[in-house]
Length: 342
Image (tube, rainbow, N blue to C red):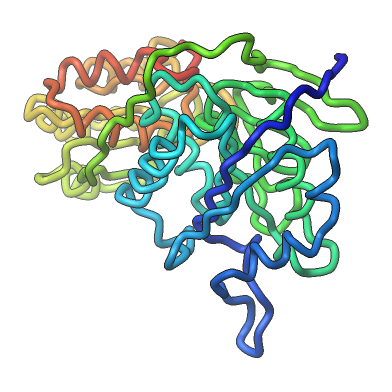
């Protein structure tokens, strides 16, 4: 693909926190205000003529990704909205632990998105030797400017993933993220190759809207041999509004009648129950086996091939709107932002 550099693009960088901006101390790596910006200023690669212009906005205080909440997702989304008209693209620097949750949440919250939003970070701080942060940030800026894919994406280790298809796959390797059920949008090797992404051809004048998300009581339970019906019943008890079941294989679960009765009762109360597979790859098909069909007849809906991160954040998004459980169940099974393959 040929690339013609026109007038300099402007990218907004929101540093929310995470390893990429941390400084080494006697007590381990710690966040230090201004340290990330100062580190970037000392790296001439970011200021080559081929690079876009960019502004870094550091959050105060920065947020450890383990402490991320729906309120923080909303803060990031509103930050993007407030600067939306002044920049050509956005890069969100974030800790890796919950990066896929934030990328998924932003994909649902940012409605009518016509500019790239790339979430990235690093496994080693930017200021340290062998940091992956420099390449991740450098490429994220470059791609946001000159290979704009108008959706929320997650960039890590030379791959740009759809944000709501990504999941953390390695706790301490550079190849920390994967997209098990959808190909990468773009591969940044020796050559930049667009794979499943679609480059922005024109910008719509439809204004960006931010969907308000409020914290919702959602339970997640992983099935295991011998699981007690009391566990399921308690996980679905009020005030829980939705339950995600991580089932076996293509969506199978025990056919014990007390367990199925507990699910029926919860569903009849209005609890939205979503069936997701425990498997890293693949999708739920509750019509394939009697054990899966028993869940379906008990009011459980399919999560198809959604990641846990996408399922959870999509539930937050829908439950925050004034719509009935039946409509939420329908929309959970609809492809809203490219998050599922039905």
